[in-house]
Length: 256
Image (cartoon, rainbow, N blue to C red):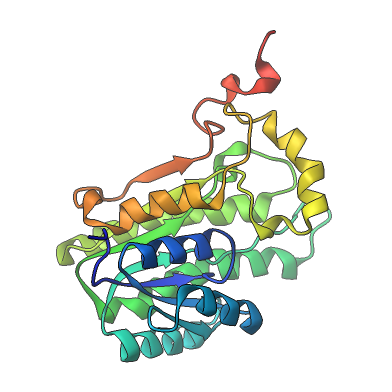
């Protein structure tokens, strides 16, 4: 018997990376999923992989509240109410101080912060008692990594927002938690060649000396989505190989 039998989950950005890995895992555990994304081709490919009886793909922009209202409505029409919201959609954006256009900075905040809030708001009328809302932070929110002000600010905002949402939604028995990935092997990095170039450098800052896999983040999302975490509320669970909690255990600091 699957951990999500009979449950319906909305996964934004469910057509690639962590979102797609979560969609596969949720379906394998008995859920039906509504996935959103901006690329229709990858959405179609995802549904083909997940199975049309288990998944509905809706082309939607997480930063557009009207678009998310439509996606939620279509999902509810097909599968009924919602038990899980995995607000996973997000973008990166290099934003060094002194060399960043306003439009670049604001786009990151619009998708990563405003989009997350309105995804939850669109879902709220359809969330059942005991539902689970899962937000996505980042180790970069606290890392002070040069050039990433917009992204770091957006993910710091998400973790703060989660605490407020947990307070607001607790009376309905709805749980709100945050999964906090570190460097993970996903398409967000761009071309495979670019990731390969960065990987050797990134590994030096991670105590476990490797990038995470999207499936490893999806496993934590499954825990938060399932009744296994029924008394977990307002938590932040890091999936970063120790990069955020134990940076001095990273290879770059080791004395051989």
